[in-house]
Image 1 (tube, helix red, strand yellow):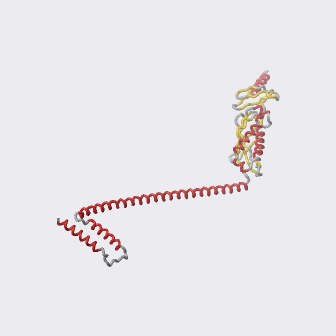
Image 2 (cartoon, helix red, strand yellow):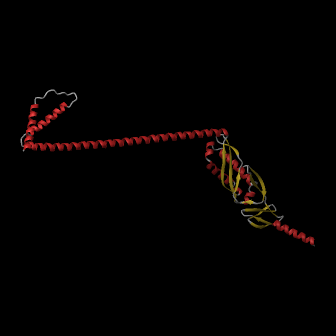
Image 3 (spheres, rainbow, N blue to C red):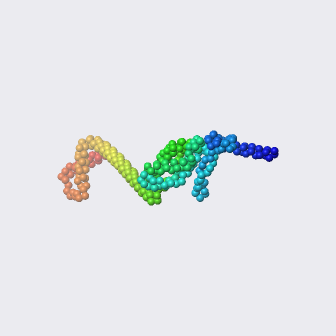
Amino acid sequence: MSTLLVLLVVATLYFVVKGCIIVEQQEVVIIQRLGKYKETLSAGLNFIIPFIDAPKNISRKVTVNYRDGTSNSYMQKTNRIDLRETVIDFPRQSVITKDNVSISINAVLYFQIFNPEKSVYGVENLYEAIEKLTQTTLRQLIGKLELQETLTSRDKINTELRETIDSASDKWGVKVNRIELQDITPPSDIQAAMDKQMKAEREKRAMIYEAEGQKESAIRIAEGEKEAAIRQAEGEKEAAILKAEGIAQARMVEAEAEKEAINRIIEALSSKGQADKYLIAMKYLDTMKDITSGKDNKIVYMPYEASAVLSSVDGIKELLTAKKSA
């Protein structure tokens, strides 16, 4: 009796342990009853009937990264389906561009399972299927592009690759969120040629910038010299105008003074009636001064009219003497 009780307790514990399944958050478990899909267990405590119900095993890719930078990937059997966003780092592969250049390329894909039943029953090995689909689609896209376009069109390649893979994997219950090309490496000889081309382009741009700088500098210098010449000409013009105005004003003042002096002399001589003789004598003396002012002019004779001039001078002298004595 005791042995039967012990066996009953052991069987009960076994059924309890086997019948209880605890599912973690963002995970699900596919349950089959006698080989047929029964239900999908969500997070929390769930119960099944042992021997009749059993979790469905699936294959999941696991990648281990080492400290030296290397990594190792292997397939692991599990009955838990992770609903979180999953990252697959594809190994580097060689693809050929449209212009027959073999390049080495690798990519990273981010996807998420939104239908666990399709991900289990729609494909044999979900992770391997996604990896192979990505590799073949990537080869097809790169084969339509030339090398230069491949290197400069990563965003375009990422977008087309994501749309193609997402459309093809929809029947597997998978949503491809994004895909990124990590590295595109052309052959060493192509890389060397590209480096030389880039160096030549940089030198060309540097020469163009330098020439444009020299041109701009010459233009600025010419404009500065032009502005300086204009300012100098304007200054000289204003100085000449001011000088001419000064000379004219000085001559006017001098003429006014001479006019005043002549008027006074005329007033003084008008009483004697000799004003005309005085003016004639002054003009004659000025003319004689101009005649004898030259460097090579030598006058050794007295003009005939000098006697008339002298008589005018003697008249002026008598006039001034008489006025002083009065």
